[in-house]
Length: 68
Image (cartoon, rainbow, N blue to C red):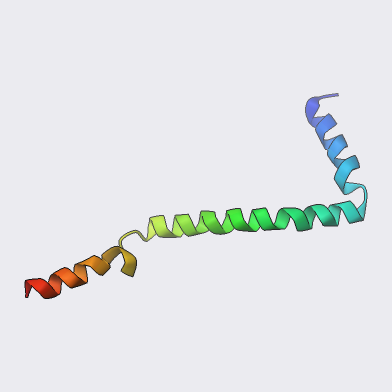
């Protein structure tokens, strides 16, 4: 048997065979997945929109008023 087959067999017997262990696994893994997804999408959004946020340009407003 290949190592992938052994892994899937062990995973099935440890987690997926019983509904209660499957539900516990889903609940436990939901938080880290949600956190990773939120952090990843936030970083991507900020990368795509760099220079368009108020935090990026707020220093320019004070300089413009002083120059006039």
